[in-house]
Length: 264
Ligand SMILES: NC(=O)c1ccc[n+]([C@@H]2O[C@H](COP(=O)([O-])OP(=O)(O)OC[C@H]3O[C@@H](n4cnc5c(N)ncnc54)[C@H](OP(=O)(O)O)[C@@H]3O)[C@@H](O)[C@H]2O)c1
Image 1 (cartoon, helix red, strand yellow):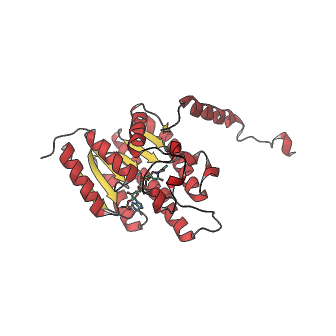
Image 2: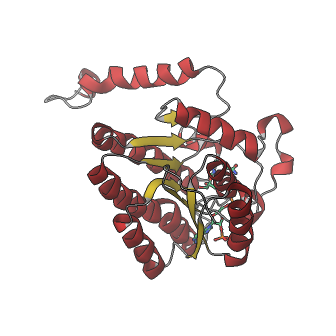
Image 3: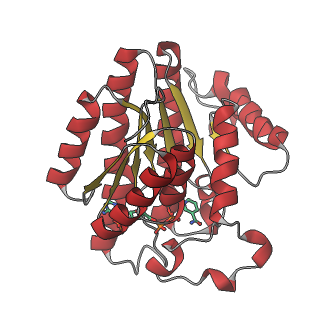
């Protein structure tokens, strides 16, 4: 029999492996009930069964391919109407490798469907649900390549820049309603994503690779501190603040009635 919890339910997409599975474990330990979503039902059931038993929380698993419109709309509807859900972890994502000119464009479209379209629809549903209730939180998994697009694949980096931007704007819309937003920007983290997208993380310098437990624990520490943007490995938070400050300095000059002198 599960205990009574007041944290509500955390909906985690891509919970069958890697970062999502680790969020599931840590959030169960914090007393959240769980709604775990991915395509691999067997893995979800194995994880969910263990976490329910170890932590005395309720765990529901849901098989959904979030690139499939019917599956996505069903989950979106559930999220929009379920008052028990108090936290959305928008984590499901895929990566890819290589140049855009040589890319398989069907794979590109699938990436955008998952990393951008699904994340957007689920963010919107959570925003409506949590905003009306005046509580709740959305954690969106971006990546450090949102800030370093030259380092990696164009479409993946652009999808993560989208996630960062969306989260920053949503924060402006939802903070005043009592909803917490966080964009998490991991660096290289040891998960299956590398081999799934045809890359070999073992070729990278070991000092660049973080273990997944450490990454998620740091992100949850940032969440507890109310950070809007969390970069787990960035030693000095002032470096991020300096970038925000430089951006703010551009603000008053981004839209003016006349062109800059150098263009005349
Ligand atoms: N690992 C890194 O270095 C790193 C760095 C920065 C950001 N990230 C981001 O962190 C997030 C999690 O990645 P990860 O490293 O944990 O990768 P992962 O181990 O490959 O996990 C990806 C998860 O997404 C699910 N998924 C994939 N396609 C799906 C679909 N069509 N519908 C529903 N679920 C789907 C997978 O489950 P099924 O296969 O069972 O569906 C799996 O649970 C991603 O958004 C990724 O971009 C990762």
